[in-house]
Amino acid sequence: MVAALTFRKFKPVYIITAILVAINLFLPAPLEARTFKNFEAIARRKFQEQKYDEAITYYRKHLRRHSRDYNAWNQMGAAYYHVGLPKRGLRYLKQVQRKTINRSYNYYYQGLCYIAIGNKRRTRQYLSYVASRYSDEYAARATFELGLFEYKNRDARKAAYWLNIYN
View 1 (tube, rainbow, N blue to C red):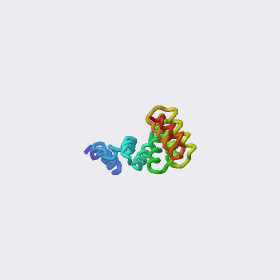
View 2 (view 1 turned 30 degrees about the vertical axis):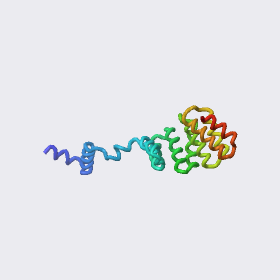
View 3 (view 1 turned 60 degrees about the vertical axis):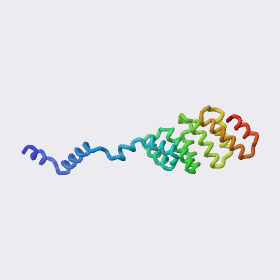
View 4 (view 1 turned 120 degrees about the vertical axis):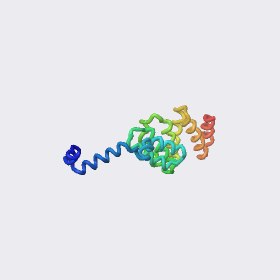
């Protein structure tokens, strides 16, 4: 009788809501909610698998929550370059070039975007900056790309210079 009295005080909507909340407390979360919490890890894996369009999607989801993750902005710019949209990739790379920790990566991909766009002056500027200022993997890649770029532009002296540095 006591239980019946307490239920009469509450409206049926409140009782149904309380029952649903109690059920949700004991049921496990759906599979999608459990596995897709870390969008950055999924995007990084998709980028390494060279599924750049999917990587862009997951980086965008990640950046909605963590807009100050500048390395994710870098990766998204690089993914746009690989998809074939160098101007859009360049927009994201330029946006974070001073804020990111991986500046050599950023400048390297900016140089690649400028190659794709066809801006020779900026290509030389960014790739030579990376090749001369840094001593990591992307500096070596920039040196090689700059040697190939100069070779394609029929400047054998500059191409030989950059390719000798690469060796």
